[in-house]
Image (cartoon, rainbow, N blue to C red; front, side, top):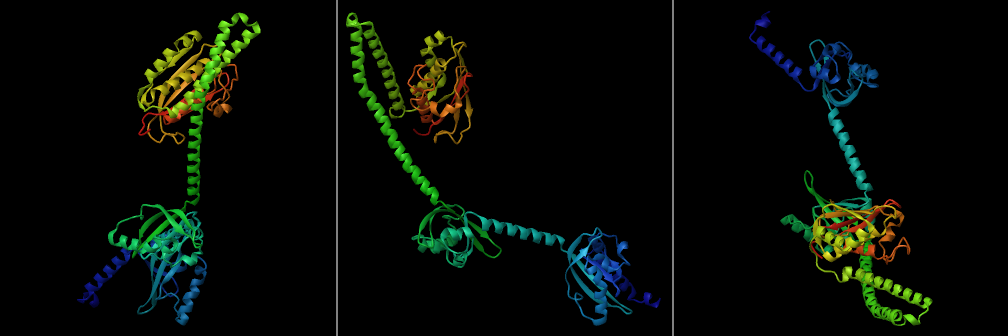
Length: 515
């Protein structure tokens, strides 16, 4: 009673209240046990960490919070310490594993202090749950392992250097690409992998970048040359990224060998040049031959006409038949020569592009075909067509050939119907145009005899005819259409089935930046 009334008693009570408040509000768990391992106190944080209410823990043996084998061995640990004083964790602290009420286990840092009271000894454990930290570390390890696996298995070469240019990391693909073992490159200056003049200049490049920040390749990427161990120089595409670590910078280079690509490009360039030369020779041959054939053909026609008119009386019936066949053959030859000239002129005698209203072009074509349309009873259906940059004469040829074909290859017992329509389309990879972003698709459909689509590639080749001699023609018309479509930044294809008609689909660029 005298102690409570002494001047120090209120201060003592305040200290106890303050201590209890600190313990109860602590984030880490705090548990006290006696020398037998029985829990005497537990703060809210410790109860929460283990998933219990405080009343469920107090009075229980501390081993209830341990998984095996520690649970079975714990009493022995305490007995050994009480008997020998040998410390395995008391006053030291270490990472251990705890067991929650739901039997799940988790890692935590445990530090134990020994407190000697007047009549007994107790042990106080401070528990810091490191589950999230461990999960984060595991996730980081998995991420690092994943990144490392990706780097090691990457097809392209990957090299990391420091700010002085010394190689810190090289993946197997990079080492193989340059003909080295990985250990031969680590610690070496990256200039080892460069031919002259880059070999001598590289350190200067890096110094200039560090002083000025002027980027020539970092963060940009470009085509450069590499030097293999055997002295071979080869082309590669190099992109470099700058990485700021905690205390320093490193640079990572991604290396893609483009040797095969360059070889293919060179072969393609040579092939294109040869093809252009061959096409030029073919066009010149077609043009010159067609002109050279005109004069003897005119003589054949002229003398054939004279035979038929002036020598009519002197010719037998068989002779007259011979003359008619000769003149018919001459007409067919004349048509073939004209078609060849038209085919060769699509590119060799082409005119500049201008704005062309395809509706006006179609009006003119239908006017020219008016007699044929009336004679065959053909029905023309059309929707508005666009205006685009084109050569008017070739657009006229395009519609003339396609509509004439649609009427020619009609079915005998069906009224011919030809439909012309258009729609805007997105540019696609197969189109031949480099200029022009917008394209228009024009469809010319009929209900004629159609054809088997297995012959689709053939019908656009010169002199290819699927119907033999049943229908007049040289087999050049569709080849001309394709040449015109390609010149106008597009292409032509067809959909068809035997007996169900045909739809020709022409794609044209609406705008051209250059000829």
